[in-house]
Image (cartoon, rainbow, N blue to C red):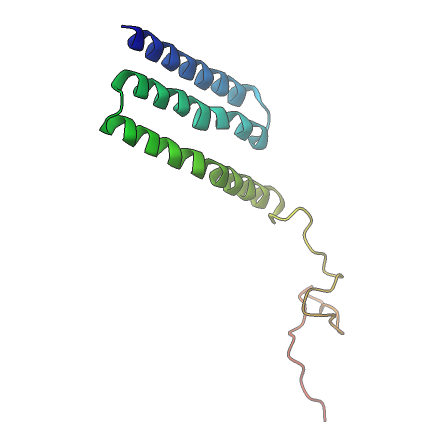
Length: 131
């Protein structure tokens, strides 16, 4: 009986976390700000669900599978958030870096003696021999 009450309380906390995250996603402007509110629903709420499963079921196969799934969610969440932010930056700015390299700055291969042609493209690095 006590285990059931504790499990229900943990599940209620998980539901409240997901509801608060949903409200944050609903009212925050911009995708980057909304992504911050997805994290509690993706990581913290499943932790409460896993603990509730452990309290109600004890140590058995279902609990092991639940904690294994939780482990993969916690490990994958930062990578998914990073990939999402990078995709947003590419979509908004055309490049994922903070400051794209300018054309007049030399790249790692060294300075280029000739500038871009009339189309704005940099010339090929292969130099032709002039006789």
